[in-house]
Image (cartoon, rainbow, N blue to C red):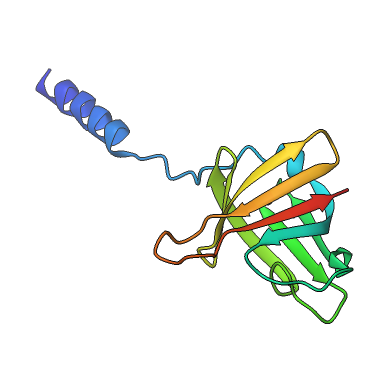
Length: 131
């Protein structure tokens, strides 16, 4: 009888000590696919007629990765490459510790808002993308 109690207690202890190590996923299904940068809103200067469309994002929401493609000589979002992200809700946290909140409107409009550092002034940036 005592042996059964020890087995039961051991099983219960093991089940309570196991943790769920899942990384939270953002609600990012609407991000899947390719997005083209159309505008940047910030406390910065861009010449009139700046072509932002040389920057493209391709979201793989199954793998929580985004590929950045810069076909021009300027980099507006991130260097070309593939980046992993995590997050929760409408927040994306990249592996370089940069974080953005996203808003998808309809099927053709995406806004990424950089989560600024409250200790720095004028670092607010909003990136607007279209399909």
